[in-house]
Image 1 (cartoon, helix red, strand yellow):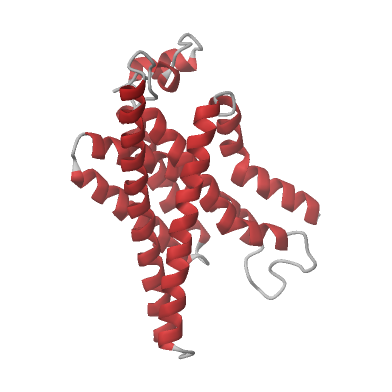
Image 2: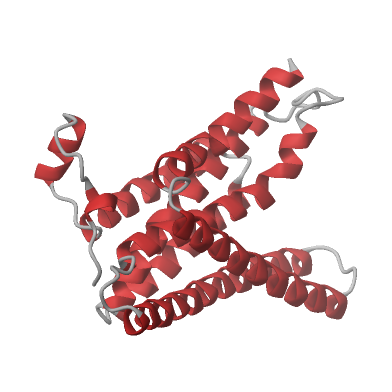
Length: 257
């Protein structure tokens, strides 16, 4: 039973991301490099967040009660801010790299920023999902019985679906964020930051799994629709894609901007 839970939750959490990697990235070496670079940027943001958390925890000490709660809220706020700051830094790096590629070889078509936004978002999402879920996933192998002391037996399943939504949201956030930077729409960046804070804050009500998942997936759907149209999608292209009549749908039809 523990093996079934382990593999089931692993496939729920990482199956869609793995499929996206296989079908849209694995065949292009340059995309793999950008994906790894995006994952590295997220790791560095985690390192800085951990450093801030360590300093704040050392300063506060081992006080109980509201102090620890406020410290946790502070940690989430700082972590989200640092992640989005590194997303902006990665955008600027990719922008400079694209301009350098065009200057070195004007005849070579450089990757579009829309494509790079998707790849970097997937890199952020995969690394975020791995670090947030791997310890929980290892515990699902046992020993022990979830819910034996009155807690919800759906803890592992809930964690898997939350990891999935975070991975997909990072992809959508990346696309919308990069588009906002390209068009100088700074309010778009603020919306990405606020939705990231909102979804992260939902973990504070984790025992209420229904509210938690419903709110997170609502945010994911809204950001997904926004990212779809930002990436150049339309009702027509969506129809052609679903009918398998458009061989160059979205990612493969993006040209350099």
